[in-house]
Image 1 (tube, rainbow, N blue to C red):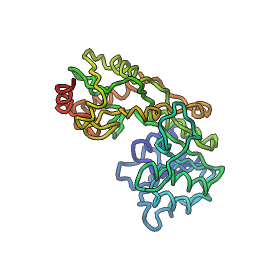
Image 2: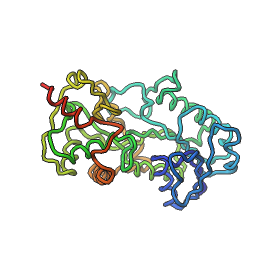
Image 3: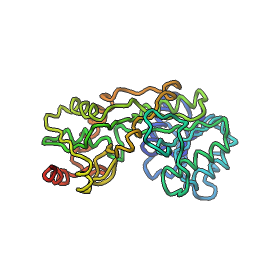
Image 4: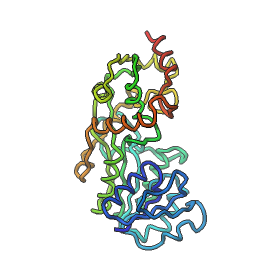
Length: 319
């Protein structure tokens, strides 16, 4: 099987390429290579996809093409040049394309955002989905992953919690009532993506794992890390008053969302499971992430979460 991956040197892309190689596929990656080399065994064609002639060395027939980008100036030219030569095409999108996050169990038929501002991630992904569908028709698979987690995650979102609970002292957590966690391990996503291409799966699939109550999620983290401190739940108003941000980024509590968006982490996984999608246990994912966090340093500067001093300040001033 000849596969062209548009990308393949970043975190998710590498996982997909490694899974394809393990299945015996012949893999070519078209990328600038600024995030690293392609996995051993894959051919890397270094090119800036925004330049004239970027696709010249990858013209030809492909059993599968996998597009990881959402940027219109990358997606559109790739479709124009390569769509006719692909037997099957997979676009990696996101569950962030959905307009509403207030319906637990919503499936792939839920309403999407309207792509008004293509500099916004969700808008760009919707535009990419529509362009790809118009050009490829029945040869297209759109995969919409939920929160992708696993060792090496550059966002630091999921890993914040096993890293934090590896250290002593009271831990600030958001109010868990009515909140949930739903993730997909990067290795499980990669395995399913490769298999879906081989079997010619088409349509739209939410690639999401099991829905877990946030309180249960924290119990799993405690069990995996051996944490023996106190989890201090603080209400939303207090957190917001202290400048704590939702979801991700600096000065955030990762995975914390407004209650109005609680169903973001409650998407239906039925189609994913019916098409062969499998999710490893949360304990297995946490164990792998914990090992990775410890190898990189649990106290290192992070892209998401609270620093120790920020956390102490909120805890000292919380009611």
